Image 1 (tube, rainbow, N blue to C red):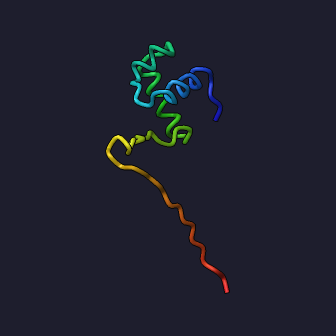
Image 2 (image 1 turned 90 degrees about the vertical axis):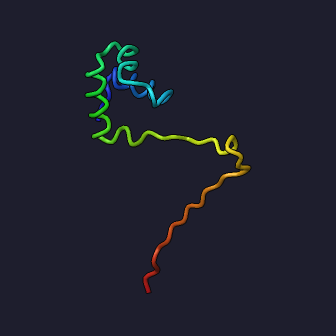
Length: 78
């Protein structure tokens, strides 16, 4: 999928603030709210935008360390 300059600007703005409303995106891109909504639906359907995330600061919640374990299990063929 090719992104035009308006889609690129929407992606840039969302990368800075994923909670930005369609109305606010519209003002900053000079597009109507409905056009921004249509473009976002197109980007989501195409998989260009995969997810909107919440990143939690666990230190502020009193946790001293955080970690993750990723495991890949494969079955041996005998």
